[in-house]
Length: 386
Image 1 (cartoon, rainbow, N blue to C red):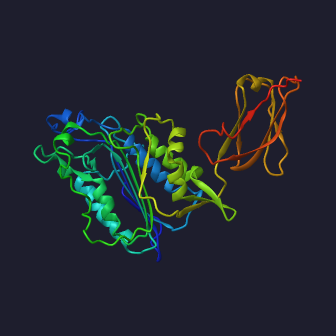
Image 2 (image 1 turned 135 degrees about the horizontal axis):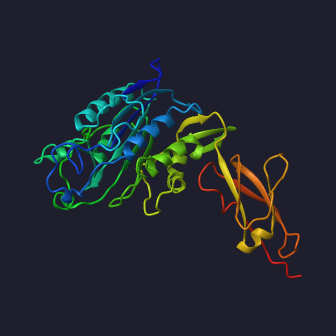
Image 3 (image 1 turned 45 degrees about the horizontal axis):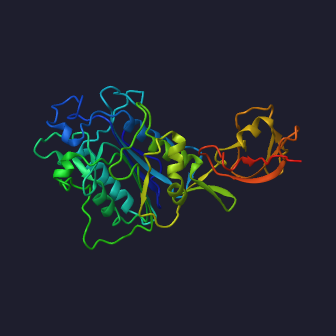
């Protein structure tokens, strides 16, 4: 899979470069000559999640439910599969490799596409092995090809991001889905000289008006993903684009950079991430509307009482707008989860046994898809002492 063009007409476009690095020829269990002393690099091996992650993000960008404010122009997808999963696409399609040279070539052409119009949106996503020295470094699939200069087959994330500011595209969205451990190699050489994909200039212009830069985890932490599945970070991004990072403006739902920044960690929790992994957002400036949703985003309301023992005794109700009130079909000690549209709901709890006082028409604001709104749908039941 390689470059896919969706709109080559005049005017601005959204251009995406997506990289999923899973197969590493010279790392543990690779198909090539292994790099000696892998322990000093953290003993990295093969990955099955990054290819799935890049594919999932590509599918989300192409969703028919998204109307891009700046038309989707191109998606350039580079994938190196792990030897244990050579066909992550499932149709034996040829894949663009993720060697350092291939990534450089793709980045250069993506840069030119983005640079062609100030109203373009530059979207970059990379998943793979990462380490942390003075800057974050992502390893290309041929990392370790040279024992004497292994870092020539990696790239400096921070310097690359700094250089991108000189691109004429005013909106730049930059996602790094990689670990950030400080390994022995980076203790001995904290600035090992991994070349950026473009060198930042000392007096380069800063053309980035709308900046969203999100990394999967903080310095020294790991980024995780289920085996053979998209990472938690990628899943959060997919859910965000599907409406989890939407906000209602002018009567319509919009996926915005501001909501992505604000809700990313909540969306990762929804995806199942361990709370030790938290995304890091840097450089966020002003909110930009990326896409309009053609339908309201999904949302869930979870109704329960506090204290817990009041929940099985309660008749629970909810309503939204002018729709009829809905009643829980039968009592249960478990919370009642219902699908709703995001926005204002009213919830009630009544007690036929009079153990607790009725609580009527409590207003709740339900956010787009994320963990069910237990806090919002939590009804505080007061004991009836009369």
